[in-house]
Image (cartoon, rainbow, N blue to C red; front, top):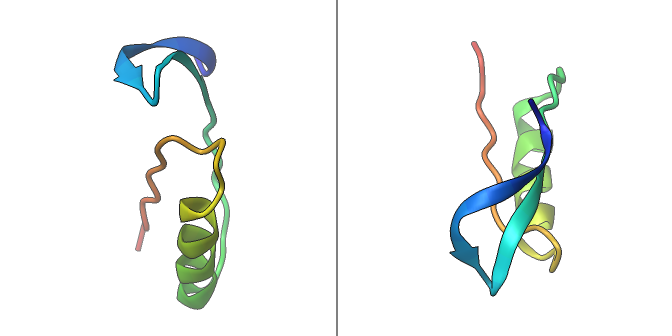
Length: 53
C-alpha cells in the first residue's frame, strides 16, 4: 500500500510522508540527472532509485 503513511521516525519534523513507486525505463545518464534534481527539491525527504539490469 503506497500513499500517505506514518514514518518510522520524524524527518525534518515531519511524522508522515507520501510514498511513490515508479517503474520506468531510462538511460543511466537520466538516472544521474534525476538523482541530482531530487536532492535539491525541498519537499523530497528521502528517495531510493534501484537499477534493474
